[in-house]
Amino acid sequence: MRYVGEASLGQSVLVEDEDGGHQLLASQCPECGDVRLPSRTLCPNDLSPCEPIRLQGTGVIYEAVRVGLAPQGFEAPFWVGYVDLDGGARFFAQIGCLDGERDPRHGDRVVMSVEPIGSTEEGLLGPVFRRDDPHAQD
Amino acid sequence: MRRTFVAGVGMTAFGKYPEASLGSLGREAVVECLRDAGISPKAVEMISCGCARSGTLQARESGVGQLVGWEVGIEGVAVYNEKAFCASGAMAFNVANMAVASGIHDVALVVGVERMSRRDGKGRPLTSDGMVLEGEQGFTPPAYYAMAARRHMDLYGTTREQIATVAVKNRQAAGRNPRAQYRRPISLDDVLGSRPVAGSLNLLDCCPTGDGAAAAVIVSEEGARRLGIEARIEVAASVVGSGFFADQHRDMSSFGLDRSTAGKAYAAAGFGPADIDVAEVHDSFSIAEIIHYEDLGFCEPGAGGKLVEAGETAVGGRIPVNTGGGLLNRGHPLGATGVAQIVELTDQLLGRSGERQVVGARIALAHINGGFHDGDFAVSGVTLLRSVDA
Image 1 (cartoon, rainbow over the protein chains, first blue to last red):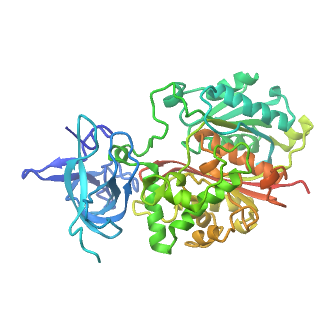
Image 2: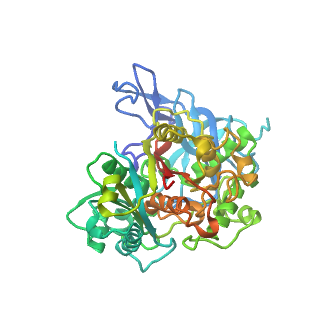
Image 3: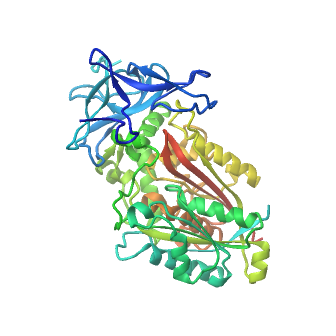
């Protein structure tokens, strides 16, 4: 089973830590502090060489939607969205929403788990961001 | 820089034409365009051709402009092939306009062409080259616009019905355009009841794929004089720009890149949004048109939903938008669209749009977006045209 990033970037965006958990592989500019995911070689703000950092995968949903007509390799329905990660980067990923949970929305706090996504035969492991409390109304 | 003019336009009907080829589509549009301009192929000094997916869909990566030139007997000239996603045709127009404005050429042919209904290559019609990591996780363009819709609804109270009104309005316009892909009238209920695609956007909120070509001739005053032709549509501005990728925390209820290109275009032309009589905007998805109203200055931020609901952007309203049916209904053969917008606006400014004519139109705006990269659009283009026949 492959990790997200291996096919598109040539390397996974996820790293496994000693406890078997996962973190996101990002980069940070030592000059301006800009954090990027996926990681960059040079900072787009000042061309400084970026340094690798790891992000825990917590953050806040900027926006999310339910995909009803799936692209090739996926089965509808599923949720996708942009997450503003603690640490600074905005990241597009799948958002977890089980039957009976209220719809994900702007401002929801989320935490990353790593799960199989998509429907390809070889399998794909990717970050899925789930709400701390998916039943909370307000 | 010299003044430049659109001297003639032409296009094929847009739709699904599996028997057609890039060459035959381009030929049909160019022949009509050259006849409209009243010039022979031998008068053309350069070709600028927009075609987004010739490589992946038609197994012809390079030289589509040469192919179209070959079809109509234009040879020995400079040919530029532009690939800029959905904005490929607009980019081709921009390049040709630069060449004529700068004095390098006096007569330039612009052609945009795409064939999507049948594929000789292995690619998919709608890939997002700049969003590969996102694509691996299920990204689709409608999901992007559906998120923009949700932000706009949350921030401004824009309603689902207002968004669907864009699709109904543009279908009504397409009903008066014999070259549009979808012309049968639709209702709000049709849009709201069509198949869910992403978020609140349904199938009738999304533009189709298709085949087609469009062409335009750009001339200088000297070129028009030499050819003995009348060119009455001046290119007041042609501006393109790439995305602002460093800004990660962009507000998706507004497209900042479009504000940038539109601002530059208005500054270059010396007039503003209040002067626009008719516009073509990139309604790849219904919500996009509402956001474009605001970013192009047709109304205040957040007022776009009310603008379309009040009928202000329909033919007969204050500022008619997408009188040819838009991408939603005229169709969206990627590379052809940017030039088809110029065809529609030129016809409007020349008063030859028949049933969908905007009476007295003298100043027009074309807007387009192309592709995505790192969360922003890869391309934005704004063209301003004005009639100078007084």
